[in-house]
Image 1 (cartoon, rainbow, N blue to C red):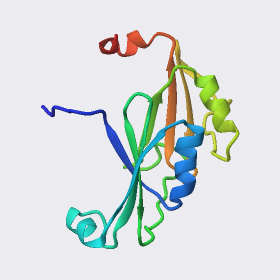
Image 2 (image 1 turned 90 degrees about the horizontal axis):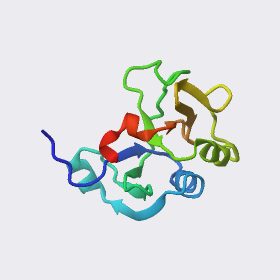
Image 3 (image 1 turned 45 degrees about the vertical axis):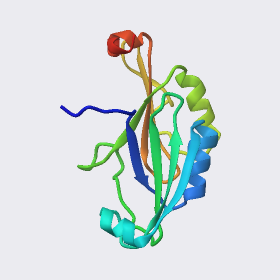
Image 4 (image 1 turned 30 degrees about the vertical axis):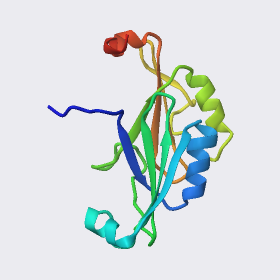
Length: 156
């Protein structure tokens, strides 16, 4: 069994690094942890890209990190289809939040498209969600549980 020693981290290949830092920092409230340029030789050896990249680490209040990674040479555009689950390999990040209405009200002040009809829906008793896309089309799911202990008793 894999034994994690730190909270989960997720990397996202991005195009407009500054815009994405603003969205995840100013809108979602993540903290900027670091910004590092990785040279081409190290990037190639690691298996990421032959041209080097810049990586920015943003951290949630719970300790998870989103790594925004901008290759020095433009990456090929991706297509994810019209629906989140319309293509194999599509990824969405889920954030379990305390106040979904507040979270979505902050997002509504941006150009980020909200996919969920009516902005927020109750998907099952006591479970509310909203799916949005970040400025580069990465899918984000925000969920609020009326009673988080029903979903994650291990966190109590």
